[in-house]
Picture 1 (cartoon, rainbow, N blue to C red):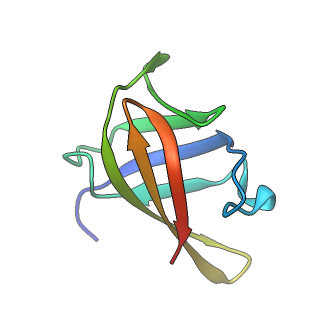
Picture 2 (tube, helix red, strand yellow; picture 1 turned 90 degrees about the vertical axis):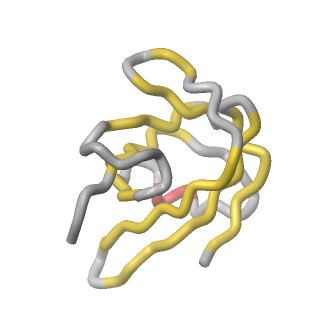
Length: 86
């Protein structure tokens, strides 16, 4: 299992993101994992109610309705630039 962070999706609007996945929690090991909780809302990455000016890719994984859901989300200064369903 290991150490991971949780990312809660409040609101993502992107052509490659399934809108039914808004509201789900995902896990990632890409942010120096320490069991922190992050949020993506209105296409911005938040930590403790502030936009985290992160630039890079996050691989997110969740298990919902008996199947795994995986995305690679790219950010520039905390804003989503691209999403790829894995």
